[in-house]
Amino acid sequence: MKGFWALSSLGVLLLGALAVGIALGAVPISLFDRDPTNLFILTQIRLPRVLLAALVGGALALCGAVMQGLFRNPLADPYLLGIASGATAGAALVIALRLDIYWGAVPLGAFLGGVLAVAIVYRIAQTRWAHLDNYALILAGVALAALFSAVTSFLLFYAGASHDARRLIFWILGGLGGAQWVYVFGLLGTLLVAGIIVLLFARDLNALALGEEMAAHLGIEPRHLRKTLLFAVTLLTAVAVAVSGTIGFVGLIVPHMLRLIVGPDHRLLLPASALGGAVLLTLCDAVARTVLIPAELPIGIITALLGAPFFLFLLRRRAQLGASL
Amino acid sequence: MIRLEKVQVGYDGRLVLRDLDLEIAPGEIFGLVGPNGSGKSTLLRAISGRLSPHDGVIYLDCRRLSELSPRELARQVAALEQEISCSFDFTVREIVELGRLPHRERWQRLSDRDHQIVTRALTLTHALEFADRNIHSLSSGERQRVWLALALAQEPKVLLLDEPTAHLDLNYQIEIMDLIKSLAQRDLTVLVSLHDLNLALHYTDRIALLSEGRVIAMGEPERVLTEDLIARVFRTRVRIVDGTGESYIVPLRSRQGVCP
Image (tube, rainbow over all chains, first blue to last red; front, side, top):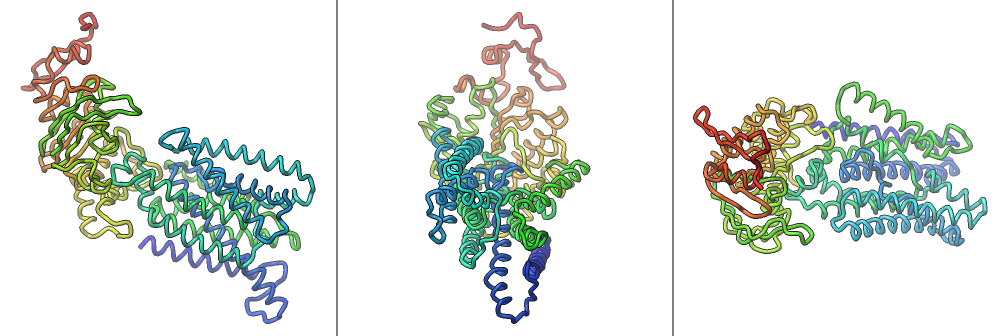
């Protein structure tokens, strides 16, 4: 019952956030406007952008919740295994090779770079430490992230042109300015597939909270679980990064906030995080679009500005209540 | 109930247990004692299916352990690690409900029967009163009772416990061992490794004394835990003294008489 109320409230909040997102913008438009120019702005620019913001936020928060459960670490986020630096390097490579004149080449490069980074991290951790433990994965992720950042820096230095540099900053700071309907549908499809996978394994994540050995004693195969969930998370994060760059803080903070509200049970926490992330990023994007009209603020700045203090506030409240993290 | 035949177990090619033969009867509390590194935990890990033997066979109720799927195994054997930590603030009840996982398909919710079993497990371990509290707000003794309730919720035939009294205060040690004893009387077979030889002496039906991966002696605790054998295996002299109608193993303080 608690779950039903929590999810329905978040659903209502999301509808409200979407309405706010659609209503706000450089050009004031009402939902019932019939002016052709305004209608075009609404259906081809604002609507896909607002929906993309919700989907990216939902995807990142869902992936963050899964990663935190999988690694039993509250500091884990979707970018833990180097997917962000891989995606940035992939996008940088496409831009440096001047392949960005082809439609969709930059998102594709980012997607492939992100997936490649995680695949390498996984392989290294597997061969180097025979049984693939979490520390091996995290350390390999840190090393690979440094390597891919070096690649990006080199490409930036090599390409040199300021136009290229600005395009790359988009990936690093993240943004939803490039929203198109095809992105919306691509991400929606991936979110549905990955969401079903992780929800089916939500109860296994609960058992994993007691450690891999205890989870195994409860009939779960920890390696199989990790492989499946990392696959789903990597796929979903890579698509999210491909369409919006790397937007920080959402995947880290939203699962925390919701764990405090709905509790740690992943069967409720995962869908709640997805909805909460959608609400947060929709609102952040609305702010990013409107505070400096006609200019636009990179959304990563907003998420960090809102997210970090809220996070600190929650931590402080927790400390006062004497509860553990 | 459990039978081991010529079992050899190890990690990365290094054998920890050699040629182990063991048979444990249903409803028995079987103790494993021996110095650190003698192979107690490794033996428990082998029986819980987490380590597969290099050689030899482990039977569970006449079935080869290796033939059972992890879920099938979890419905018959519950195992508790020596130290269990919980990430995130789960409530006691939420944790004990995890014991029902091997009995449910992943899309199924807990049935009324599952909830009854969870409540019964909480009642048996005297954990019902704090069932809705955060696991991290409990004392170490209370937490140990929660882990036992989790294991009971699996409705296992066999319970494997690795040092269940380690890091517990004296009163909690007795409480947990009394609890384990009462559970064994309800047809549960318990295999427990114990550091404390006196607890082993008083609470187990039979014990195996392990040293360097081999069983040195096996049988009733009074026969296995003799002054001579303890001196040989633990390299410490002890006296077995009578008090309040029971025997107690008392280590001698001076190391003058340590056996070579």
